[in-house]
Amino acid sequence: MTPIEDDESDDRITWLDHSKTRLALHLLSEGEGPPLLVLHGLGESSANLRLADVSAWPGPIHGLDFTGHGRSTASQGGGYTCELLMADADAALAVLGPSTLHGRGLGAYVALLTAGGRPDLVQGAILCDGPGLAGGGSRPTGPMIPHPDPQAADIPDPYALVELARDLRPSDYVTEFVRQALEHSQVDPPIIVSAAEDPEWLHSVADIPGIQRASPTRALTLYRDRLHPAPRLSHPKR
Amino acid sequence: MENVAAMRERVSTSETELTTDEARFASPGGAELPARCYRIRSHGNSLAVSEWGDAEAPPLLLAHGGFDFAQTFCRFAPLLAAGGYRIISWDQRGHGDSEHTALYSWEADMRDALAVLDTICHEPVPFVGHSKGGSLLIQLALACPHRVSHLVSIDGLPSRSAQPDVADHERTSRFAREVAGWLDHRRRSALRQRPPGSLEDLARRRGRMNPRLDHEWLCFLVTRGARRDADGWRWKIDPALRFGGFGPWRPDWALQRLPSLSPPLLGLLAGQREPMGFDSNLEDLAPFLPRHTEIERFEKAGHFIHIEEPAPVANRILEFLKS
Image (cartoon, rainbow over all chains, first blue to last red; front, side, top):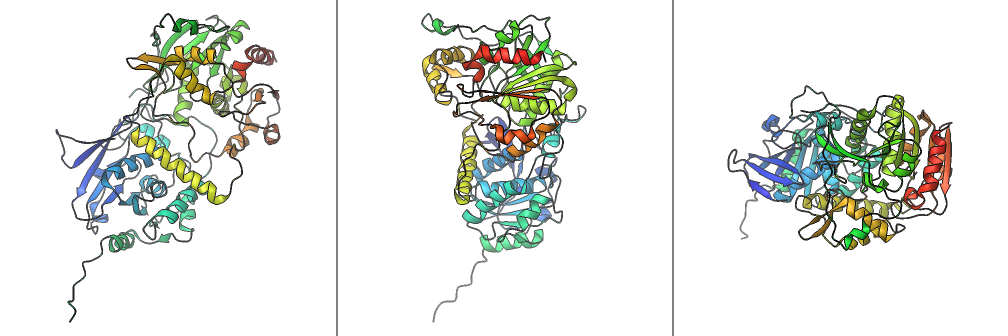
């Protein structure tokens, strides 16, 4: 996977060739120090994000368009899973280095998977409300073969909308990722639950000792203070 | 956006010409190439379809397992066809001569299976699937009970868990390795190619995962499932696909759905354990088997029962289809 600078359009986008997908990684705001990576909700893109929600972050702020969303390319005929979106987020981390994740809805779930999958690269994950937070629940419903709306626009990819809204998130599976984050993350707490909606998977995450609940603003402040300590005034010894 | 099931294209599959020395692997005993090869489009992707038997005979849908392709049925499908069927099988996306896609998932495979079925007919037909193909067709039968007359699973019935009992901390660290290993693989897969080799090298490599299949047969599979590039033979399968993995699905869920199956079910189990085997066991399955179920265990065969014992398996299935 190689970052490619796009020469014909937005110089605030870094293009990532990730497997057969071309991912758009947007620089939303410049800054010094550890970066914040914002992960959008289902059907959204980095263009929809409200920067005001994260403007307290002093470091650079990046937004990743998941496969099938925003400026990133789609997968012909679908095949979307949250695990594959975790790999999208990992592709961004490969370029950005250790980062704090701020996920909305679907992006919150992907942030949690990434925090467990790459505990060495995720410096805290904030899980916020947004489209696609609940997913398809903890257990499969009756077997069916869902088809996307044939009239829908190409982006967001209608296959992504159908498949990622049904993605299963059983508690015991989610818990494995939390355990990894708790054991290996260098940031305490490794995950902060900031969503008001309380689907079963998120409820079980918040119940695990070591995981905190806090408002999105407080969560961002907490990680900011941990990772961007205010410069100390030096008092020369007498 | 193209979304409607499938349209046929009469395009042949890609074939590599064999050297004089390689030609000895072209037709092992009993193998018969498909009578018809063509492509269909499923949700924008091109899928390669192989058919055996009389084009006017009653159709039967046949699904291959993970990392296989339709022409791995070259020995088995002709025997079913001889029983009076038109056998239709397809290369799953990313496999054999079908198109490689950006992403792969169970749901995408399910939609492709339905797209293939839609090109055949809308009357109920028998489904026969091996391994992952068996699991796919069980789910297709549950989702579309009006499209299936009989269901046969060849070492593809749900298994409670192939994972041996291990301590909790060991399970967690194994899980961590799997996730990180998969992410590493995904990072590399834009640049990755399957390693090249001679025809026999590829057969030997496959033999590590299919230790019970003879070298001559594996060499034949190379002639169908691989192509010759400038630097050697390569399997056609998408290098982005990776064996094993992790995900939210629980084997128990598949087991619990079994009782709701409506067509008669024939389950063939393998007696010999091997790397790709499902290890389904009758004790776990028994409480969940639907009423019209027949189970047959092939004691001396491994995961590829239909390749090791093609005639007994085909005969057993043909007998079951008469019921």
